[in-house]
Amino acid sequence: MIRTYLVLALLVACGSDPAKPDAPSPDAPPDTPPSQCQAQGAVGNFYRRTPNPRMIAGTHAYTDGTVDIAITDPDLAWDGAAWQLYYHGPNSVDYQSPITPMIRHASSPDLAAWTIDDAPALTAPADVGAWDHMTTETPTVAYNPDAPADRRYLMLYSGANATFPGYAFPGYAIGAAFSADGKTFTAVAGQVLTAGDAFPGKMGVVADPELAYVSGTYHLWFSSFACTGTSCATVSDYGISHATSTDGIHWSVLEAPVRSLLRSGADHTSGGGQPSVIYDDVHCRWEMWLRSDTDGESSGQPVLFNNMVGVWHATSTNAMTWTINYNSARDLAWNAAAPDPGEHLGLLTGADVAIKNGGRYMVFSGFDDQAVPAGFALPDHSQQGFEPGVITLNVATRDAL
Image (cartoon, rainbow, N blue to C red; front, side, top):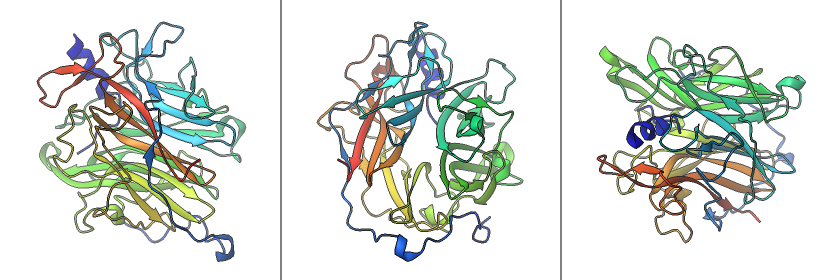
């Protein structure tokens, strides 16, 4: 029974890895006069902030007697007064019982003490025919002060209602939801972005959305996968794609996948996924953190489920063309010997970075064997069993106080 519900819980616990360039977009933020853009000086390195972990799945009880089975796909922002966190927290009465996929919201003054809203921000619909009934996950939220009052907060998320044909992961698409207060969101009808929008004439999935609202335009980066042939056996595209919108519902795909983020520009299947993006208006540049591991690179991690080695860093001046060096070190990499617990058993794919007063603040999920709630277990690397373990939320910073 543990195995049955654990696999179900983990399948909806995070964005599973789903194994046309146009002319420069007028939607890209306008060039800022050089006199208003400060030169980028030396930057530091990310380091883990103690104590980690900051949150542990299964340790917060809601008023209905349930707990979060996992804490994954974090999305972090500083709103000027407090930290706002959204994450996928599949919910159940215990680890062996059926779960409900849902997105949670929490706030914190210091990234240490968290207040988790008792009501979910968004829950997978109960209607078994809904496109996002099987899973509702990977939230990203942007605030638009110029939007109508009931649409100031836009959430994009991944959803699915079936496994993708021929593969083990869900057939993801991207949906949208709005909120007036950033706490409770209402989903709009249907999907707002599909693989068919990114890759016309092909099958595939789009997932792991990441939003930024700059100069009146929503920018979206997302994991994307496309394939052709019988049972979709031939992978044609794999990487991070880019789209823009003025209303959060209607999207124009600018490049799928973004060529400058590929390991090889000639190989459209050599990309990564799970992007996190910020716009630094002081230095007039974009920064992205992404996962891009080669086959077998994470095989040394004890737990085997959507692992990542760490995250790479890319920069851009126009949100279109990126500079990244895959021969350099990652900004953050798995460290089993980290001084605090939180990731002894591995890293879960995806990390999110926010900016505050020039500092960079990263939240990431780990697999750990400390303070494991009763009954919690994770699949071991042998793929033949499970070991006691729990998913955690951890913090690392760069150039931060």
